[in-house]
Length: 419
Image (cartoon, rainbow, N blue to C red; front, side, top):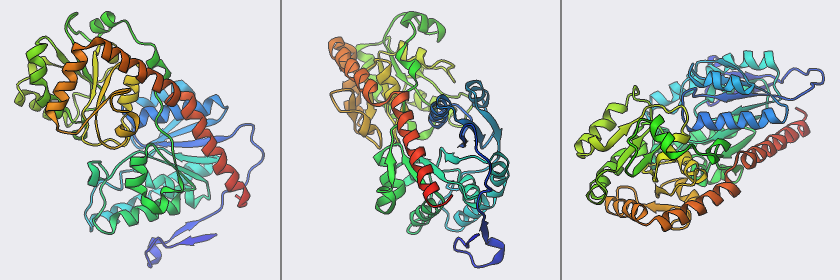
């Protein structure tokens, strides 16, 4: 039995780690996949693709969400069992006083996960978000190997994860190192920002995958009908969620020049209209004077329709750990313009399979949008290159095999150490 004090001397903060109980041979391996979000979004889709890859290899997959949501039923329809264990993002504040309280609260919640692990006796725990510290603590308590899949960025590069200045990142990195067996990052940008040099060499970079269905687009006119868009006029699509870092205002501020040449162009925008940021985005469109040219479509059940209607896909984010909508645009055979931030710079080869623009450079974004709407041969060439890129780098099978390799490696190392 190992004893970890986690930096606290008082006995009330001690965490006891016990070895996993040995059981008889299993017919198939089992895994607990901790998927914090159950709402539509990039991490939820990625988690679903990971689960699908494991299920195809006869793994039993039990998914634990941080809160109830629409994707519970979707995961179950794929063959997963699911449940909800409430836990919170330990990196929701950079306050030097509040940060350790959040850290300790989530460590203590690890006991809720221990019950699940002891009941299910999984071979491995796979945590699909940096925020689920409680699951990592619970797995460590039970002596289980942990693959921790990191997707987020800190606020110093425009991300949404907070940590106190000076010592914050060091504390986060020490926690990750102590509680994980293996690390996966969705981009070099995430590895550098979250892990830094001490842990970067111990992580594997596995980009997100694009769901296979995006390679089969809906008919463009039928998709317009489904989304209740007019049958004519160019469409600029801005897929994804309605969140501050998605950069809608950047596109809105760039759009007036486009309208001078293409006055019937509309911006098709996806994202939850009941969310806390929806009204802000609408106000930004009003302030830019282009609200009449915006179509707020809400959560779209089949996102292929948005890509099908779009002549150009725009990803104007201020920060991105990866940028799933970029590769969805690639697979959908659409030209993509993205901000030159984070993981987007690792997927878009500027001028080859898409275009990069410095965030807030409204003049260049306007120019690129106009060029792609005017020059169909250029748009087609970029689209074809993008589709080829998706074929060779971002398919479900490629990503799934790489993740299964990491899982197998983690289990072998675990067995060598005696479990």
